[in-house]
Length: 432
Image (cartoon, rainbow, N blue to C red):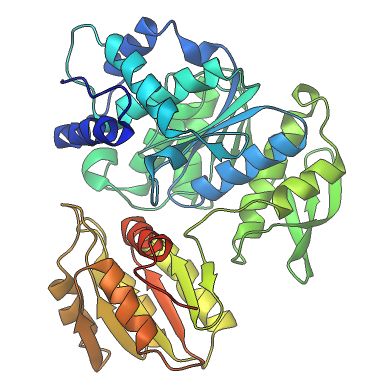
């Protein structure tokens, strides 16, 4: 692997991104070898590990913000990034700098001693763990990349694990059934460490409980051990294992975010004795001030433009429900791009009834479904369908031609949302 110029973060990232050619290789031997070469940085701070099909990013961001508002120094590792790699690794809500990237790349590169070449995600994970140790974080909130059991992040021994929910995804890697996928995600549960979950399916819960029992871990279930009661205007009361916390609210859009917030509060409740300065006020502030881009994110009011990843079937269901509740009767232009391993026909079936016109697009990734395939499926339900492969141009066309009171919605993939945000930031699209 060639060394980049130490002052050129762009060259460094290009070298790092080329590791994507190795694809996805689940397993822990390579990341363990790298971390040993770095002096086991992941053992120098407390961690919380988060897995799940949907919501894990929102839960991770909310939990990190609550910990920060409670006086802790907090690292946050999530994926994918939307616009810049730096977003993946944050300390106290601030992404790492370009200079940090170069330094971390060089450190991890020096730690490579034999064995197979690391994947992009393994290399990035090592960078994150090393940076959190250098910055002296009290806590690191770590989101899995895929699954859990053999995910590169699964070298940590967290104080607590969270598994948000389970649905069918990445079947070629995780298995073709809910119980098999639940088994993989339950791999993040560690011996005698609690696990909080929002899983509903009986078969998935059975797999999780079996894994937890084998590790002498206690499972805390939403709806059984803790719950929420909505009190109107986006607020709710959290009824926990030992506490009742009224007048809670999340700053994230979507009715489902209250359930994600309940998972965060359950985690905090179980870790109260390890967060000395936590208070009802810091819990409320942390939830209310959390921001998580690209998820029901309004980026312009006039004209109205919203971005939502909606990158799998369950996320598309949530988006469709949100549209029916808050945008019923409004003219909607759907700018949509989907990855080729997703059930695009089922996703479109959910989203197209709300759309008066569709612009099929395609993210700049080899995993993108051809825009023409999306357009062909859309034409069965919508008459006004165009193909504009470049995401930025697709969004620009949608905004220019939108009716004054209409909604332009970009959805279907976090990669598409990321390219839309980049176009907005670079002013190739000017919505307002």
